[in-house]
Image 1 (spheres, rainbow, N blue to C red):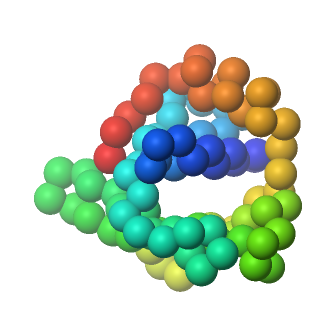
Image 2 (image 1 turned 135 degrees about the horizontal axis):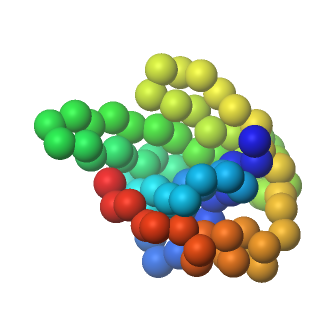
Image 3 (image 1 turned 180 degrees about the horizontal axis):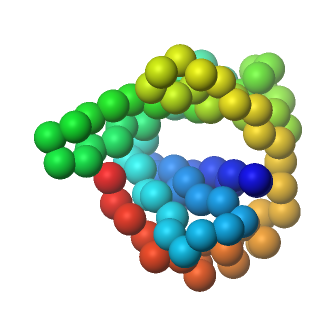
Length: 94
């Protein structure tokens, strides 16, 4: 499964090649060199997750750390394809 992240005006979009929805998450703080904190708000539940480059100033390898401390590796993808996929999805704000 290929997950894509796209930062636009203070938001991260999280979606896969499959599915019909896209999560839109507000960036709480940070930058991709030191870490970007995003926060999920779902009813009374809240949790933080982090995104950062594997190596500073090298945007070809992104690390996502979920709320349980698990890490996932992502690599660059075609931006125009990712934006087309995002635009076809139902956006869910958290």
